[in-house]
Length: 408
Ligand code: HEM
Image 1 (cartoon, protein in one colour):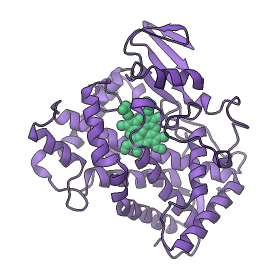
Image 2 (image 1 turned 90 degrees about the vertical axis):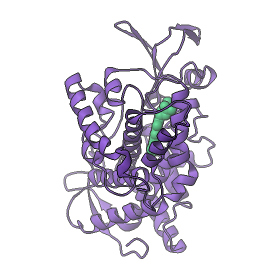
Image 3 (image 1 turned 60 degrees about the vertical axis):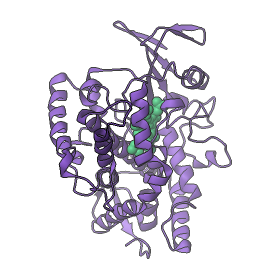
Image 4 (image 1 turned 135 degrees about the horizontal axis):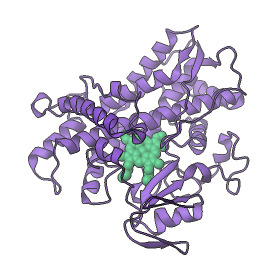
C-alpha cells in the first residue's frame, strides 16, 4: 500500500514475500528509521539506538549495549535480580488475596524495577515515575510543548544519573553497570565515535523503556489470553506446578508449553505491530519504484493473522508452534515479533527471559479468576492505538494463592 502524506511517501508492507524483500534481500537499503519531531526531541536528536540512522555510531552503541547488558551471558548473570523482583511481585499479590488486583500495574512495576537494577544498579531511578504512565512511544503523537516539558523532566532525572563523579561501581554487585561503562569509555577517548552525556542519556532511557514496555505488554496479553482460554491456562499451570515441584527450583528452561504460549501471544499481540523503517536510497521492490527517504512500515499485525499462513488465525492455539520450525529470530517472514535483519531487536534474549519467569511464577503460585460481571467472552481485548499495541485497559484479576514451597 502506498500513502502519500504531504511530501512523504509511506509504504505499508503486508505480505511475508515483500517483508523478506525489504528486511532481508534489500538489506541495508531499509535499515534506516523514519524521523519525526517527537523522536528528535525525546531521543536526543536520534541518539537512541532504535531511532538512530544506520551508521557507525548506531553500530558502536548497539554493540556496547549487547556486550554489557543484552547478551545471553549478561542476561544469565542477572538471574538473582530477576528472581528477587518476581518474588516481590508474588508477595505483593499474596498480600492482596481476596481483593481485585490491578495486575497490569503490578507487572509494570516489577519489570521497571528489574530493568533499573540490571542497567543502572542500585540507588533507585526515577524514570519509572515518568514512564510508563506516559510511555516513550506514546509521546510520538504529542505536540512540541508537551514534548519539551517531557524532555526537561527526562534531563533532570538523567543528569542526576550521569553526574560522573557521583557513581562508579554502582552496579548490584559492586561492579560497573551500563551507565558506569558508558561514562568510563566516554572518558577513555577510545571510541571511534565519541559520545557525550546526551548520547548516554538517550541510550539509557531507551534501554529502560524498551526493557519495560514490551515485556510488560507481553505478560499482560498472555495473562488476558490465558483467562479467555481456560484449557490453555490449565495446561500451562499444570506444567509450571509439576515442573517446579519436581525440580525444586523455579528454573524456567523446561517449561516447553509456556514457551509456546508466549510465542502465540507474540503472534497475536506483537508489542510493535508496525515495524518502522525508511529507505536510504532510491530502490525497487516487487517492481515498484521506492524513492529515498520513504517511510516503510512492515505490518506484522496483518501478516501474523493472515489466513493464508495461519489456520484459524484469530484463535489462541499455542499448539500451532509445536513441532513447528518457525522461530523468533526473523528468518520466517510470516512471523516477525522481533523484526529481522541487521536492525532486529537486540533485546530478544533479555525480553523473553524477563517474560518467562514472572509468568511461570504467576501460574505456579495462584489460581486466577475474573472479577464479577466479566466473563471470558466479554473480557476487553482492545489495543492501544499508536506505535505500541499494549492492552488499552488495565487487567484486573482475583488471585487465589496455592500453598507452594519454592517461591516465598
Ligand atoms: C517481548 C519483548 C520484545 C519485543 C517483542 C521487541 C520487539 C522489537 C521489534 C519488532 C523491533 C524492531 C526490529 C526491526 O526493525 O527489525 C525492536 C527493536 C529494538 N528493541 Fe526490542 N523488543 C522486545 C524487548 C526488548 C528489550 C527487553 C530491549 C532492551 C532492553 C529491546 C531493545 C530494542 C532496541 C534497542 C531496538 C532497536 C534496534 C535497532 O534499531 O538497531 N527490546 N524490538
